Image (cartoon, rainbow, N blue to C red; front, top):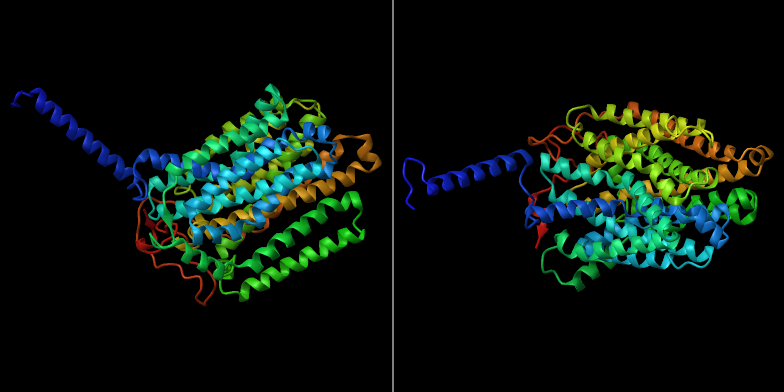
Length: 549
């Protein structure tokens, strides 16, 4: 049918198509252009979702374990220290191997490293489900941590390289990505509670293994090839370069230093702080970590480049956000155990009691993602710190028979406020501290400190719990050891306030771009990076750094 001036169907169809095209163009203009490494929007959305899950891999496993620790401990005959190591060993190995695996991801391939990490995580979690003794349980949980460490640097590296330019699209992607760590623990608890209620604690790990096996298969489609090496470069040459540049000594110093230190802190209360093996582990762990610091200053390709600490804002953001998250992980573990041991709740009931935190976390994360470019980010960090403190105070004041809605419910809501706001601010800035081709390493540095911090926090709180439980007062009042463990989190979250005055951070994540000189942290000078303004992009390296197939 021919088109005419009176509005024929052909003309109307053309007008509708034109209007749709205009509307699509407006949407692209508002959100920003889709990164070229994604074939279509569904792949982009699927990748962001999978990258978020990848960041949550370790905390997801810790959450799944936390609400079934009482059941595991009874069946396998585990001591309190061995129960703590179910969670602590995962955090420890995830942190200790993070930096080395960040180098591995950049040199051998981000996509390959990611897929191997997801697949091995599923395999090791399945092995945990069939544990027959405490040694089996704790050792394999440590292997689970290594697998979780493999997926984080590639995910962060691709995110930082793909979303180079400031845009609303980038803000939305990083807002979702930042939700992974704090929400992983809660959602892991919920899924684990459901599986344990329907079957037993072993079913929780089997369900987790199935989910990650499916995600491994999906990753072949969702994960784009965004690498730091030229497309088509032979694997042999990349492997040769990796073996030449890999900081093997730094990796060994990190693994054994952190491992010995955390083991000493955990074993001290039960075995005695003056026993020879505890003293040797404590001293040797500290010596190895000090040696690591000196080694990184002289090695040509260090795991943790010393120049990044010349950025004072980066340093103080880490110092201001790390203690709160350490307290967050510790209080989640002891709250879950308290609900099982003192309140007599089943794993599913524990999960239901933690559900408001998951819902609130999703809401606060959206709020945080939409306020980074409107509200001074130093104020947001202050809000996060105060929320952590008030939450931990509420936990420490509660009794086993206290009203849920008066203590636990508001404490859970405030705790996740602290996690969501601090992670959004920190992630946005950390991704601006290193150039695009080192984004995986930047993610490794950030997550290493937080994973190791989690292990140390659990070690310290376990030492306090066990010490108090062994006293006459602790035996007379079963709640007292939990109260003292919660007070450890109060101390940690309060310590973050000491560093906030040194953070000069404005707003971040603006959707407009103005040319700023690139940050060169290797140059001499005051040691301060340029103040992050509305134009700073994550990984502001030349566009040709981003290579994809």
